Image (cartoon, rainbow, N blue to C red; front, side, top):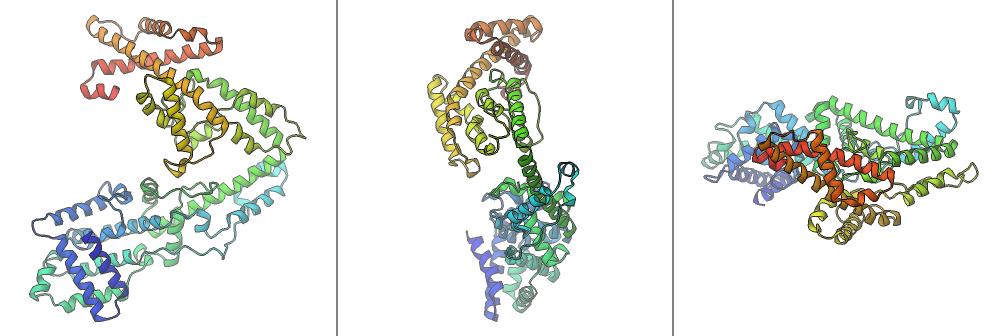
Length: 542
């Protein structure tokens, strides 16, 4: 708290100082901060040197993105490690410049949490979407099939949208202070500045002259980035929106994860004006292409609505057949489906959610799509139909394990807990990004789906225990743990234990039994690690 008080006192005074007395106040604040950073016997110098190493070392991007108190809650915290410790002046100057470029992006991200990519580009999203839609609508089907987004007229700048001005004056002052102290090269380094000021070996007038130059010369983004001031500021705003989904109304929260991704993206492009310009250009291009694609799909949908709707229904029916709930795990591995009938792995969440877009419709609802014709489809609201009919429960697996542990003896309590958690989840109580309508179809599916997950968890535990018993026995009896005979033995044991499987409809029973065989094969792999591994490996297997 004391550090923050003197830091803001120094920077605010420097920004506003118009008299010699104001500069003297800034000098006092600077000397005090140097003294704090080198407190005798307190270890402060080692601490701030450690912070500096975190800011420029191997894990620098993660450190700079983290907004927790022990990391970098505010970019101005960089003043002590970059200005008040001698280690900073031993680093190559270019390394310091890159650090401050990273800090300017972090500062920009801190200020642009409500900024969407089109506002950053000074483009009216609605106007450009309408323009693209009109352009595509004027084309015939053959032309649409071969149309390139590069042919779509470029958007015009909306001068009613003011460019977002980023507050960076204090951060640039920190940079200028570092540059000035580096150039001043005081005898004994910055660590001895307090002593020299006190004993008069460094005249206070020298320090005041340096601060006067810092205040008058200031510093610009253009100078720091070796580029044009206006272009750098404009590109920074756009880069803050890199990776946004342009079709989503609310911009994502600029938390540590989002900040780290933007820092990593510019790290790949290069910490220079050219790298910033290239990343901003790719961000603009992706945003415009997304809007153009949305316009193209809207035109195609209007022309071929019946075919598109009914084709969706056929794909959803095929998804149901290929992904029976009797073959669904009670846990959802990262970036994969929970169904053992579909081992696909996805490169990211967007790809995963896209693949799930046709999941979770009842067969009787899908029949409504088959019944449409060229007349009834005209006023059919497809989006509203999907929203009201789909019973997909995103987020279910977040709470499933927790509630299985808390309510392992009662299915009814497990189902009630899942319903309560999902109500809060979709109400946004656990994060606004999760907020969505909890439709009657979704709510009515919670208990049946909970039943599937409850029974699946029981089967999974039974399979794991059976496989581990045989793996332990195999260590002493030299049996082939996990061989076909052992797997068949476990399979029959599970069928005997869960007799309700035999009462399922034939196609459901077939899916359930195939799923259990997958669990048994995986269970023996896990059991071999568990039985023959070290205590740490056994813990990981559990």
